[in-house]
Length: 225
Length: 200
View 1: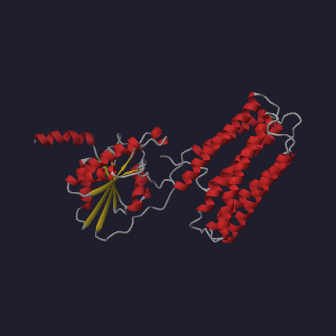
View 2: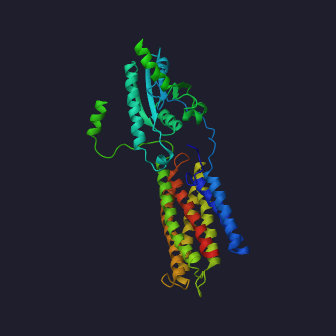
View 3: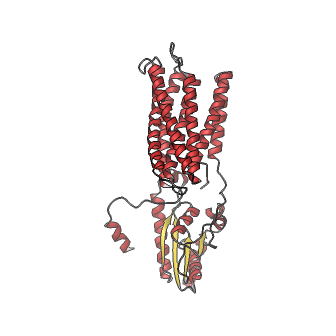
């Protein structure tokens, strides 16, 4: 989700809005005084358009200090897995197994962002998205358990970067595993989620590409063998 | 899973809220409140534009006069009170308690001056809300704003009392931040009200 200016997020931003309002309405008042409504109206339109552009245009992600991990036992390895539709992929489970291999103790937290359509997100209609994410998560946890990996899981924010940040506040991770569809089919790759996560978080990021179609096609083959 | 389902079946009350660190819940509350306020003011401005633009009623009505100069001075006082509000918050962020106290006290006093001046203006203005559509809209818009100033003053009073009791620190000053956002919003609305009702 793009970051935008919010005039009421902080007192400083509300104060800035006040100053801009004073300038804009002074210009509208002056134009109306000099040239009547025919002069005031264009100034009002320009001021409104400028305000809309200023507050609604997407902003680049602000550079921030990389978010680190919470302290934990020295022999414990913590793996944060972020995946959605690919959460039950075999390739991902192999990567998780590799990540915890050799550790004295291991904790795995799987986060499934509750992906939603922009319209549903806007009207806060996220129940179905969260239920679907919970279903995928349960399936994945079962698959991990069958593979001998004990993991816990949670449904996260619809923005995968925000979901990682939320998880890191309670779960200090040694490594973050992000699972996506292959290039061309992955919305997360299109949005450069992996690259942005590497810029934003201190823990090393492992990117796993899960091709669910290829895995599904491979299952009957291996069954036949 | 079974244990989870069992716990769900025996749990009472609403489902647990989805908590995200994307936005502070208190700031979100203020945002929603201000959103509803914008809609409230919007409905009053719709009435204003209907009377003035659609109906072409004279503004002000014949024989009535608006105290533009006094209201202009009052506007300057209100805008200045936002400057002192910002100063108060900037001060506490830097650990300057004296600046916080002085800023809040000045903001409160200037807000009170604004409100008392407006009440005096009502007493001397020479027309009443029931006289005509112009008078109704004038008192509705300025009265609605005045009510908001009163609420803002109440918030400021509590913040000021707390500041003089030693509350707030550079790390914890939400009790000043939230009234500050509200106060600036009230000032923004007054700029719009003053320009449309008194100037244009």
